[in-house]
Length: 396
Image (cartoon, rainbow, N blue to C red; front, side):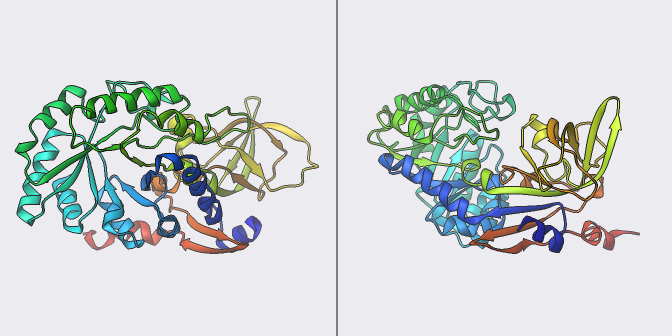
């Protein structure tokens, strides 16, 4: 099927398996069943409309971090009451849009943000706007430092002191209904203990305020990018958290764990280059399509669609972009590649297309959905003309 997609749609192209997405949701629902959580998919991981629609059909809500993600969720068929609005820097315009739509929750990370919500809610005649204060528990997650968000020096959340200050002065915000605490210490979590420590801090704080009946435990459930990765099981997270969260309504916001292994990036080999004792396989995919390796030194397995009988060699797979960091896979043992060969860059369903850019004036790739042996385009490939569409009329 990949060969057919490449022949008809071209490369680079993202491909998403909708059935795998449903299986991943079922796995999370099963693992956390004893907590009866409200699941909200973190749309920043992959916000394609077809993907969002498939996820919503599973009864899952949306965790949005911008007005644009709220708009996308609504266009994909989400009810406003299925949407949680998070983010450390919400603009007044975004807050007003969210209030007008009647979204379910605001996860708040700034005192000034509360003032904006209160002011705009009053103007719009809204009351009982549900608020969860994001607690920064000052807990360092066992993950890449660029995706750790719960330590004291991170920009995210509010300190315990500030959360208490706000809850002690709730009467200052008559249009707001303070019901929850939100905790998210990072993505791709490898340590259950750190998660429990953070959630315990939230619960200990919440006990002093009877109106706080909801704990949003965020996301961060890990995904295996390498075959030999030893990761905690989702059910282990749930079992460890169950006694801590007893008596609270629970929200959870998985993203990567729903879509990462459901997506791949298809690319074609352009050139083979021998230089300084190394072999470079230069493909038509790059950091503009998949920036994770350049940004986080992230690992993605590379599967060549070639005859397995070929002899192997150590290669570095790169893109054509004018950056030294434009490396998709470094020092990998792969079959000897030739120009025109196809490769499948695996576990690329999360933080791929959503982070794609136009750097080097490269049009963004096509996206394709696969289901029950059938495939179809869910976003066309951009063109050079698309790159100029927002500028050409202003050229003097």
